[in-house]
Length: 479
Image (cartoon, rainbow, N blue to C red; front, side, top):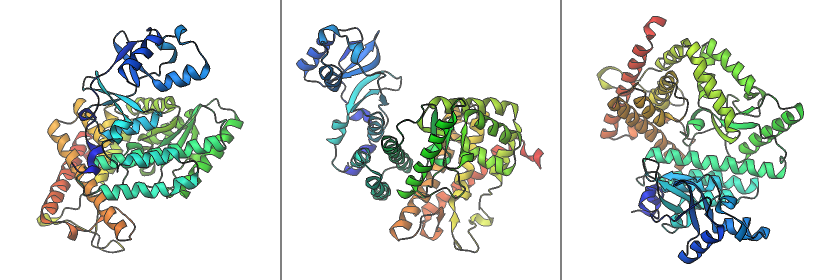
């Protein structure tokens, strides 16, 4: 197995299957004795047989010894860490590392398809598997002590992706890795700013990412799309703090190499920094008036994902979106109609229409040709079904469960989506290697015969999907 692919192997193949457990009410000295006798550094804590937390040697040092507490007077409940962070056995090792990094821990539980705890894996277990991996980059991000140290790490994310393309790692996993690494960069930047200047920020706010970043579907041309949601009750002084923080965060993010949004969709701009009530009013306006601008703005916002802060604000907004769409169903019809405006570039005799003039003459915009129709069309169907979370692939599978798509149609759509994103990412990597700016345009002359055949089948699949949308939302009645 190539060393570089190790982190894209399932956790279940490498985790420890021997899980030592205890109960929340067990005496602490008894559990510590078990850890010593068995030479282990952690024990999973259960409540009535259900895993609920973990106790580690670090808990013993930091929560007992460091405070001079008498362990004979303590139970496991007094010092355990809860809840137990887990990862699925079928998920990749990289996902396990990401969750450890996100939560500041060194081990996670491993669960099977039914959610039953079946093992434990540590960061040391994974590091022993290979020396060259994204883990070093994650470690460097987490240990950065200044913005200046973060700046070169943004370029290393791009370099890592370029290194992995062509090694057998699937595009969907590369895209997921890009999103996870970008998340870590942003979270570290927020941590540095808070530590240095903004220790007193209120708890009742959230920094949310939107669009492809919200869906975790970024490639190498990603700019930033983000916003802030805060509680309605915050006083002017705290709002001023959030405003200053947002401005410095976005400016510093740009300084590290992440381009600003050309459309100004950034938390430093007042229109993208509102209270929960302010956002619900904006949503009501967009949904009641499905103009092209409102459809575009609403679609971007519907992908919101909390990167930092109070998750309940996102949950409240998503619940409001789902409920409001039941009252304003015409918005989804017009949003579906917008998807049909992007015609697939298939013409007579199986030819593919390319740009006729301009800087991209002779090239195909693969995003407009099919990626946009799938991401936006699936989003419309998901919202119709009350599905407000996840990215395009997760929504496709959820739509099967909701009965909107059959399994065959869903698999075809996901395969088409993966192939089109693969072409875009591969072309972006080639552009960077040649010193050109990465774009969404591909050169059909660079495709071999098999790839051209797959592209035509993919575009036919997109056209079939658009026809499905037209029938489902009766779009002929809008003409």
